Each structure stands twice: as C-alpha cells, then as structure tokens.
Length: 223
Image (cartoon, rainbow, N blue to C red; front, top):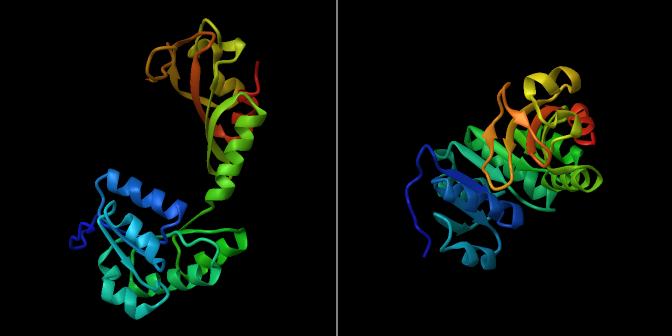
C-alpha cells in the first residue's frame, strides 16, 4: 500500500506517471517531499503505489475528483501528462481554478506551452527539447554536459582550454576575455572545488562554466 499522509505545505501533486512525471515524483520523495501522484492508468498507479507517498487513479480533468482528492491543500503541482494536449490543458485549468499556488506543466510544443500559460501554468518545461539540445551540444563540441537555464543563459562542463593552462583565473581572465564565469574546477581523482581568482588551471582539468549561451558555446570550443 502507498504511504498515505495528510497534505502539508511541502507536499506536491504530480499528475501523470509517465517517464517524466514518475522521475519528478521519485526525485521529490528522495528530497523529503510528500507526493500525491495521480494517473488514469491503473497499471501505473499499481506500479508506483509502494514508491510514492500516495498514489491514486483519477481523471485529472474532473474538477470534482480533484476537489475530493484535496489538491487545493497543496501549494504546488506538476502536470506531466504526455501527448494528450487537451487533458494537459484542462488539468492545468482545473488546478488553477482550485487555487493551487504554483503550477508546473510539461509542454510538447511552444504553442502548447503558450496555451498552458494562458490557462494558469506558472512554469512550463519542455523536457524532450531540453534533452535534445543537451545531447546535441555534447555531441558537437567539447562539452561533457550542458544545461540551458533559459534562452540566453547556460551552464556547461568542459575541459580547460590550453590558453588557461598553468595560469590563475585572474591571469587567464575568462570573464573579461570570453564572457563566461568559471564556477568550479575538478582535477582527476578529486572533487569539484569552488573556483577563485587565485585558482590555477591545468591541462585535463574539468570546469563548470556559466554565462550567456553563445559565449559558453564559444568558450567550450576553444582548444
């Protein structure tokens, strides 16, 4: 049986237990959050019943069903419905009308995302697009990992370019010369450490850099 607990100010409603929704729900539980997970598919409900705080089968587009489940007692909700755009939009609308304070919603396209925002979503995410961009950047450059925080700002993991070897960050000056900030440095066999002006970079060092997306891309392409 699922671990049933009363909603708290730190509980989150997750609607849709596909790959994205289940990953979000699992991560929230690991972080100590209580999760009310909702899906129409009984097989998915049964699968996750022992893993999440409370899992129920319900039609998330049904205002009365959501009311009975007490979604209004939760501060945050994640709508992770997959390809059923109508159900996604109606669910966000129902949550907004129920008074949920912060609604995150998965979108398939930009048009879908704009509709979600208009009916009440506070945050719209595009997981497939984000993962596609991440893989593309890693495949085509020297990046080892990449996250675009918005359309104009990114964080990446890359190797230290030769122009920075055996120099402190103050000497190589990546911020003034390349428009990026080196946030952390990792050497072989060691953990990441915070980068400081006196930090000396060496060949094979891994860097976490942040800055405008175009500048991050150019810096990561340096040899």
